[in-house]
Length: 301
Image (cartoon, rainbow, N blue to C red; front, side, top):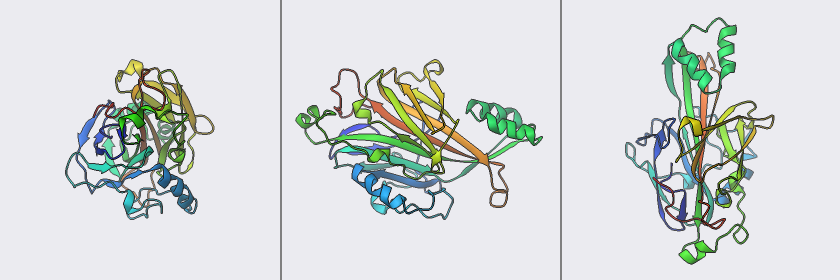
């Protein structure tokens, strides 16, 4: 996660890697062993990435040794030191809505059946529960390998307080690059600009799996200031992989989804199931801000 979701052009942005169901989660150090992609894309780069990506037969699967999409050049890589936290830092100069992504390599977990089955239900993976039942494997251990595909949206305003105060939705350049899929295996694609939203507005997203709409997948929305279970929102994607919800609160929101498929027995004999965890984090400005305004440092680390 970024230290802030709204900054001025030229500001240094520190970046943390976090894991956990509750915001802000547990911070962990940068690890070359686990890191596959850690990149940030400007609006103009994402528009170019769409052209590069159109030439790929399919998105990167995250397999060790697999090539990155052509759009993922070294100029996008987030610099940082292995074993250190924060995991990286970037100085962003181009105004607009930037997209930060983190994609991990695979890790493995082996759970007893009495823990694996409730976990599947919690994540909306009842189809896997049924598949295990159909194959007579409900009482067997859950051997799983998993990866993470994370995305954050960062609003960068022109340098200077006066320019920021006058940056509203009607006057600033409209960014559309953030609506371009990056090419991760499971990806939440925003169909909105967070700087133009306020509490009670509708937030639309699309979930893609292998570059196709992910149908019937559970998406959970959590507000950082109201992380309690009773305040969390959950939805199932429609036939186009889309969900939309009313954001009851301003502040930081984290959307998450998990998709699971049977693992390839030939390439991964130690796992029966393969899951991909996607997330999308962004900040909706407070109701007192002018639409499109991006107050620096308004998000908590």
